[in-house]
Image (cartoon, rainbow, N blue to C red; front, top):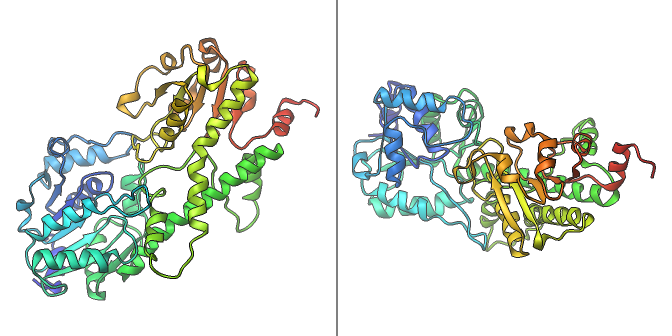
Length: 452
C-alpha cells in the first residue's frame, strides 16, 4: 500500500486505526476516531483497563465532559474495542502511539514504554502502514530513536515499507475532548507527502488548524510550548515570593500588570505538576546534549517551580509559630492530592513533595481529595482535630467550605491557601488565622483596615 492508497482509505473511512496507549490521550483519541466511523482498536498493557473500555466504562475519573457518553456509544456500536494483544493489529493501516515518556531523576528521557510499543508493533505491522507518534518526545527522537528502531525490528525501510510522522497531543485533564477537537495541531511527517496524509486523517477529529511541517519542528513546538509555560509560571512564582517579602499582594499586582498591553502574567501557586510541564522542559534541553549550548533559564525555572511546595511548608511553619505550635507536633489537613483542580491525575503532584517534607519533620497528615479514590471521604472528618488546613488544589468542592464549621473542628485555627481560593476577610471573620501564597504583612493590614 502506498500513500495515495492510504489517503483513499482514510477518505472513505475503510482505514483501520490502532491507538497504542489508552490513557488521558489515547482513549479520547480512539473514541473520537471511532465516532467518525473508523474501526478503531485501543491497545494497552493493563488488562483491567482494557476490560473497562470493552464494557463501555470510562476509566478516567475527574470531570471530563462528554467522554463517558462517547465511550459508551462507540463501544456499543462496535466501532471501538480494546485489547492487550498486538497480534490482533496485523490488518491495521494506521498506528497512533500515545504512551508516557517520563524523565528520570537526572532529567534523562525514559523511553521504555515507547520502545516496548514500537518493538511490539514492528513485529506485526503490515507493509504500507502509517505510524504516528503523539507522545511528547525530545527533539531528534523521531530521527535518532523511533526511525532506526522501527527499521531494525520490522526489517522494512522508511517510505518503502512504512511511513512515519509526529503529531504531538495538546490536551489537559478536564478538557480532553475539547482540546483534541478545538486546538490547533502540528502535523510533522518524515516527508511532506506523509504530513499531508496525516492531515487528511486528523481533519476527521480536529476542527481547528492543522499545520503541516517536518518532524523536528513538531518535536520542538511541543517541548517549547510547555517550557514556555514553565518559565512564565516560574516568573509568577518568583514575583509571589517578592510580594510576600515586601508586604505586597501578588494577586492584585498580577491583575493590574495584566491591564497593561502585551502583558499576561501567569498564576503563581503551590507547585507545578502533571505529566507535561515538569518533564517537557527537560526533554527540550535533552535535545541539545553534546552540543555547545549553555542552558540557564529553563533549568532555573524548573528549580523555582519545584521549590514552591517547600515554600508552602515554610508558610505553614510561620503560621504555626505565631500560635505557639511547631510542625513536629502538629496534625495537618491537606486538601487536594491531584495536580489539577477537579481531576484525578496525580502525576508529578506537588502535594506529594509537600507531604514528604512535612512527614520528614514529624508532622502527621490527613489527606482529602474528592477525585482520588484513596483520599475520598467526608472533608470535615479529615479536618477534625487538625492544627491547620492547607489547600494545595483548587477543587470546586473546596470553594464551598464552611469556615465557621472548620474553625470549630480545628485544634489550632489555621488556614493556608496555596491557590488563591479564599479571601482574608471571609476567613478571618470566621476566626481563622489565614495565610495566602504571595500576600505579605502590609497588604494584610490594609485588608483589615489596620494602621501601619
